[in-house]
Length: 201
Image (cartoon, rainbow, N blue to C red):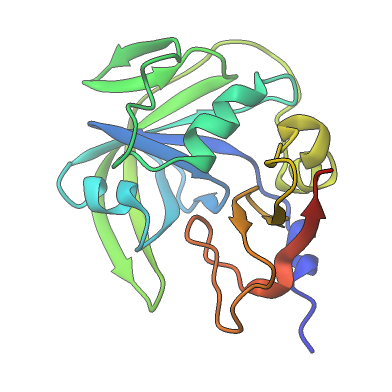
């Protein structure tokens, strides 16, 4: 059996990806070229509303999160769909190159989309950096740090008296006595093996 928790050890960070009208938390980000206008690749789930937004925009921004980021930013951009809420309503942002940047971040990169690659579940968007800056010098939040400190960062609460299944990857909560055999997290796409049973008395 594959133990996909090994992927938590890949050195990657935590970012808020934003584009016109929405955004989401991403971790699969890589610099794939150097030079004056480096290329940045970011992978976004096809079922994610932000994927749809990116296909209708020519720019995106990545705000780099620190270990000291306000956990509400992770909850807002990671646990909710832009179809349902305005994610920018309670988050301080700055408009740069017509894209909103998260103020509570280490800095940002604004990219112009130059290409995209499709696979079964994700789209890889490739962007050329057209603007970037550093806000502060702190340690970035790695994906591994996020996984190891997720419970204290996110403090997922469930309804008392109900059986809840909490996704150990993103914190999504499913209510029911049992998880369906073919259940997949609607937010991050992992299967039922990544869910932990939780009952609040």
